[in-house]
Image 1 (cartoon, rainbow, N blue to C red):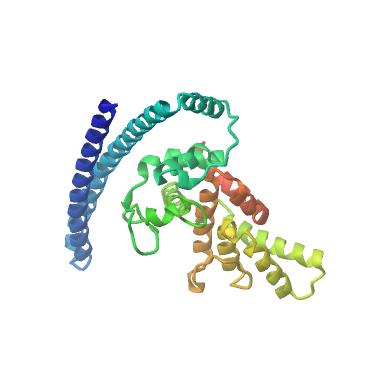
Image 2: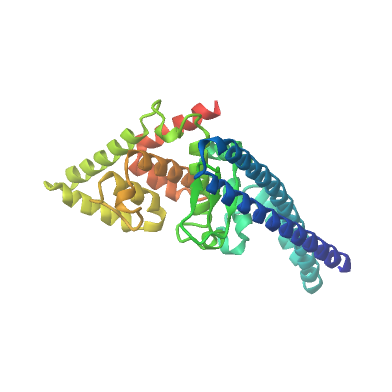
Amino acid sequence: MADYIVNTKKAIAIKSDYQNMRSQMKAIEDAIQTIAACSCMWKQSFNPVQVQMKELVRQIEGERGKMSSLENVLTDIIRLYEQAEQAIIEHAKDPSSSDRGKKKREDESNGTDSSEVDPSSMSYEDYLQYRIDHAVDENTKKMYERFLDNIRIKDDAYDGTAYYDGFWNHIKYNKEKDATNERGTGCTYFHEVGHLVDDQSDWFGDTSTDSDYDFYDKLSQDVDNYVKKIMDEKGYTDVQDAYDDLSDWLNVDGNMKNGVSDLVNGLTDGKACGGWAHSDDYYKESSVSHEAFAHFFEAGMAADPKKLDYIKEMFPSAYEEYQRMLEDELN
């Protein structure tokens, strides 16, 4: 037992050293980015300096990424030591407890453990991994794995609105808020990664707006077809009645329909909307397509199919087009 405690403390100390080194590298990176931003105001002849600075930042981000990976390994080691400590304590109190734990692990390995997974019972990082392992859409999961090494988290304690920066190719978001996200733990992380994949899977723009696909047209047609279906079923003669009906539907289980609500709001100019939307001036053809790709991606990386089922219900043909985009990239 004493050995477990000593080794746990050593692992925690090493992890702390890596975190301090990463913080120092982040400070250097921020300073270089500030200088690079100022260089935008310089003459054209200074552009090579800005390019070199950008490359420097990318190199530093790469090193920080390696340190982050080491931290994750150390976190896993610490967790294993702590679990071993706890198992020893529990076995001393109740020898039969280890048998119950063994049975649970056997059930899980055989796929017979039907217990509901509560995100609050895991660390944030563990639950993200749980979502990855149990992602409901296979192609989306494959795309995540393909671009995993490209994911750069610039700031995971960001106070503003989360975003993916297509120039610097990094993400800023708040993981503490995302851990208790009412739209699902990890929703923001996977949504922003969706934007990254959309951007980096196309050489000359974004996959969602690539002219080889009819993504926006299919999104628009799907909403029009859904509204028409409501009018036919309810006997409405005023389309606004159908929009109101659709808004009511969007507000039922609204957090799981956050992506559908956002897209419907943009595609109907605000005539139908649930509890989630961007500002009215945000929506245009390209932004709706970008958001749709990210919403579809996030839902595909969920362990619960409910959110993706709502998307398929509202956007059947657009979802097929999304799958075509992924298959073209994967093949």
